[in-house]
Length: 144
Image 1 (tube, rainbow, N blue to C red):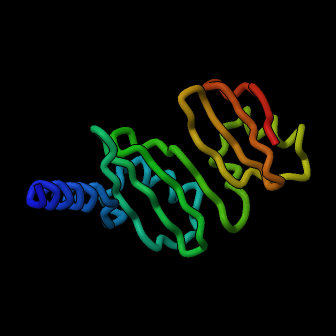
Image 2 (image 1 turned 60 degrees about the horizontal axis):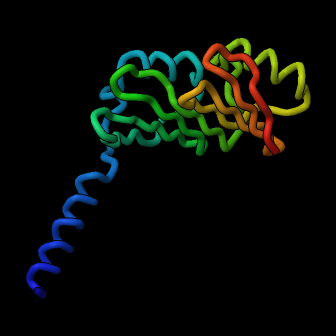
């Protein structure tokens, strides 16, 4: 019985180690991800890039020296989450309808996080309010 438990612990440890994110070079990112960073984060310095294998696709997370980070889906290279620790999400990275709505309804606040969801988008404002949008960028609801 002890040998079986030891084998089980070893197998679980091996699996968790293989599932851990791996550091990769910036050049390993899909070309569209590299171009998105160059266009929307031109002054940011890349600190690390991690690849995490999730189910049947890869997810890349780029960490900047500023503490900001952005995640991309490996297959398509499309961004999936932008988290800003210093400054707001760049206006050039925000879909137009979302930028227009947030600017009109919350003129004194900034978008500090933007993520894609199964239904569209989720944005977190500088006061902690979450805004939800459908896949077309149309407003759905707000939550505090």
